[in-house]
Length: 496
Ligand code: GDG
Image (cartoon, rainbow, N blue to C red; front, side):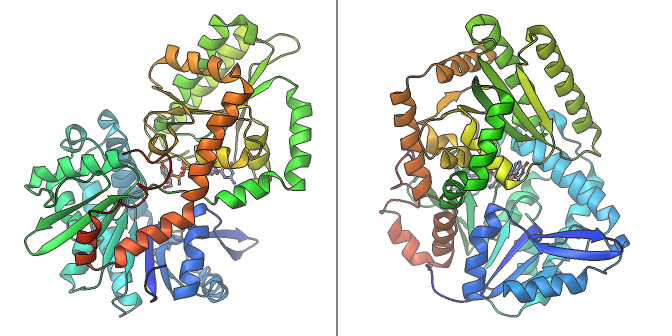
């Protein structure tokens, strides 16, 4: 673990859940993998988590006492950045979700390059900057997360901030062909140069970032290294590296064997029948390749009639961005294609697709992971994709198979064990579905063991501590480290 001292985490959302029940606000700590990884570090070292609490100024601030009490029980400060309704529209739904999200996932035609969104993004980044500057005078590490906060380092430097600034991007970094379409491309790149360390999910993202920096005349100044690079801009230097995020492997493995989950597995087995189970779990999003996946399953049932009545595809779709017309249209399209396939193949005793449009609790999630013979993780593009990793962690008997898109960040680490597919190629994905369903048990075990070994060694705690170690290392030591394996490169399954 790196040198002790408080750190401050900054992310768009605070790791809390605010619920209003009968005129009263209830505030609970969040439960995601990122929170689990960072909570022990913040508790040990002290510090703060700065972010938007998820409600707007127009809702009032009756939630503040609840937030203070969670801060107290967690042992670190939770600092709210209050946004108003117009911020949410221009910054969050506008610049973040209608420009950066589609562009960085490779869908430039879905972008609305509206200058008012960019202006709103600047105003909100300024609000975050002031909240950070007011939160503490300690020059300890600030670790900023994700694409909502690209401008914060530059704005903090303008206020005279001297301390270390690190950034982690959870989504992909786009190719130069896509990035160059952004009207504000130079300013975004120059803003990023104010960080000391930027972490990406994969080496491919790092390579894309390097190619994009050449748009502003900045090049790596050390011999090429696929997982870590240094860029100089005047007297500043920026390190950038690939740090693939993990999940809490042991927690998923233990939960999968718990009695609650075992009970639920038996019930689900009874409800879904004895056939093989294909599983998809995705937020409703066009990046997830849901329609392509349905068509691939349809193709597999068409080409291999023996699969009919022998396999069930269970798809959990988690509602998302329901007020955006594009997402509502995707839901309608998904419903239509599911209806068509079920109408085409169903028999009195069999329905090929079971589909749930909802969130499920952690026990149900683990039961699905454990029960599934094959997980279908076929996004058109994804930063990492933790569902693929959680599925493998939950396969404690090494029996399952993973079909994984080559465009998910997870493919860099899991390529030796997963069946990699190009999700745009319906025939290739259909072939992989058949291969996974008919794979000999020995081969399934061999592949799953490879993936589980990799994931156990590069879990979310490894990810957080290797990133922080790098962020807190003096620059000179990092130069020396160039000759050593870069972070994660010595982990099995982490390709060169
Ligand atoms: C960003 C990047 C990157 C899903 N349904 C339910 C549920 N989930 C949980 C899963 C998993 C998470 O949501 C989804 O995983 P992602 O990897 O897609 O994470 P995001 O935060 O959405 O996305 C992504 C990630 O950041 C981390 O860097 O991998 O590429 O887009 O943990 O378990 N959880 C529960 N009920 C559900 O119905 N409880």
